[in-house]
Length: 370
Image (cartoon, rainbow, N blue to C red; front, side, top):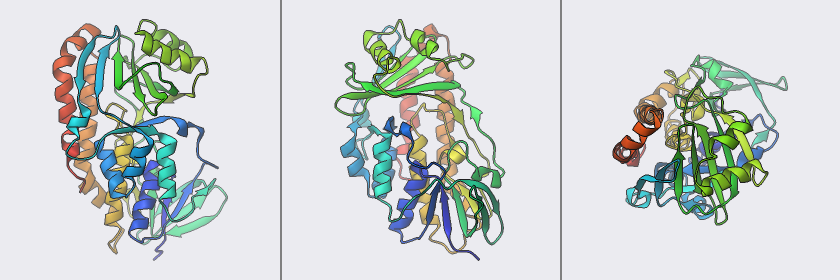
C-alpha cells in the first residue's frame, strides 16, 4: 500500500492542512495547478472568531491578527443609511478568539511560511481514481502517481470531487454573482453593510488605509455580472458607499467579478480520497464561513490521519464535521430568505430577526471543533 499523502490545492484549505500535518510530523506532497499565487490574493477575507480559533490550533493566530484589523462592531443599514441594528462583535467573541479582516494574500503567506516544504506550482491534477489500497493520480504533464490518500482541497471547481462521485456546484440561494474589491477607505469605521431593493454592499476595514468591499444583487434572478449593474445598483446609497464603488470602477483598486456558487455533498470521501473546504461544502458568503470551515476541516482531518487506516477517513470527517457544516448551511439559507424579502418588509423585520439570527448562527460556532 502506498503511504504518500497528496494534498491538491494551495488555497486556505490545502495550506492549512499541510501546516496541521507538519505539526504532527506527517509528511505530505502539495500540488497546485496555478503557476504562482493568484492575482486576487490582494482581496480581503473576513475571519470570524471560529476561524481565528482554528488558526490558533495551527499556531498562526497571533501573526494573522497582527496583519489585519479586528472586527469589533457590525452595522446593518438600509440603502438610505438608516441603522437597522448593530452587533458588538468584540463582546460576542470575548470568551474565545476575536474576529479579524485581513488581506487574503497575507493569510496565505502566513500559511505558506508555516509549512515545512515547497508547493509544487503548475502541477495540475487531471484525474483521480480511488481504490481500496491506494489512489492513482494522473497529472496534466502525463505523470502518474500512486498515493495512500488524496485530499481534494481544490475549491468549488474541484477536479478531485469526481473521484468521490459528489454533487456539482449550484448557484447560491441569495445571488448568482458578486463583485469584490479593495479600495482606499472612504470613511468606514467598522464592518458595515447596506441593503437596498437591488443590491447589498459590505465594506470592512482591512488595514489602516483601505477597505475590503463585497457587492451582490439581493434578487436572485438579477444579472449583476456587468460593471454597468455595479455602477447603477448603488447610485442612491450614502456617499461613503458610493465612493467605494466608484473608486473600484475607476481603477482605484483591484476589482474582481465572481459567481456565487454553493457545494453541498452527501459524500465527503470514497476509499482513499477525501474532500475538504469549498470542494465539499462551499456556502454563500452570508456568514463568512468559507475560510473558517476550511481551516477547521484541516485541523480535524490532520487528527484523523494519526490513525493507520485511511480507507474510511471521508466518512470519519463527515461524522465529526457534518453537523457543524449543516448548521452553517441552514443559517445561510435562513439569512438568504430574509435578504430576499421585499425591501420594506425586510427593513421592518431585520431589527428583530437580525440580532437573533446572528446569535443563533455564531453561538454554536463558539464551541471548539471536534
